[in-house]
Length: 245
Image 1 (cartoon, rainbow, N blue to C red):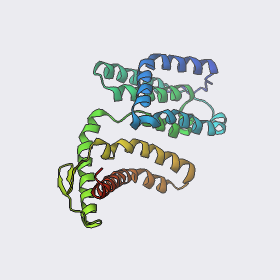
Image 2 (image 1 turned 90 degrees about the vertical axis):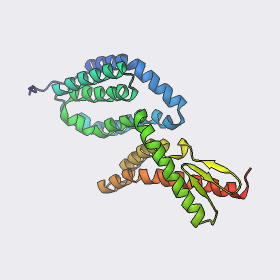
Image 3 (image 1 turned 30 degrees about the vertical axis):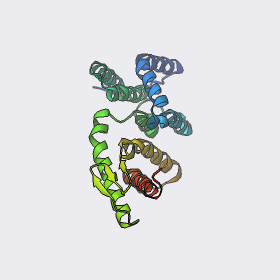
Image 4 (image 1 turned 60 degrees about the horizontal axis):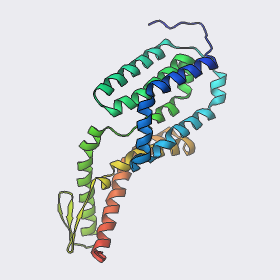
């Protein structure tokens, strides 16, 4: 595909119409996504994602205005791909692919209207938008139980070795002297992982200038989520041993 070299400035009319058409096409998907943000306690951060992404993009307005828009036709190809992904995902009732198709189409729209340079400037806030989409159900189900078992093992070890509380573990069930504790899905750590990852990216962007620190901070969210939930299970076990009520 050849990219035209002449500079074409995307006017406000083009921006308005592309935005309106994009929202209209994905309105049912976006409505259900917002509804999940409102009703799913694990996705409450979803309301903040587009707001913070927009704020970060607004902070880069001087760079954006200084750049010369060079519409890139590969962006239109990306919009078409997003539409095709959304269509196939809708047929297969795959919510994750349908929702990420909106973000892909949005990135394609920015690339088509403004070109590579401006897309590069706003690449971080555009990437953040993926964090407003819940983890796919198939991935959630595959990793939840192993993380439950890991949290159970860590909590059992802590209670046995640190607090001298006798505990027997049967899978994700902890047998104390006076009662049983079940480590349910909420204690796996996966529920807080998406929120923590988003928070680490925002914190790193605003408060850390070194890229390697940002990377370390982002990847540290996985052990932090696991240890935090194992600690919660441990504290619950200790309190249950002191007062079963």
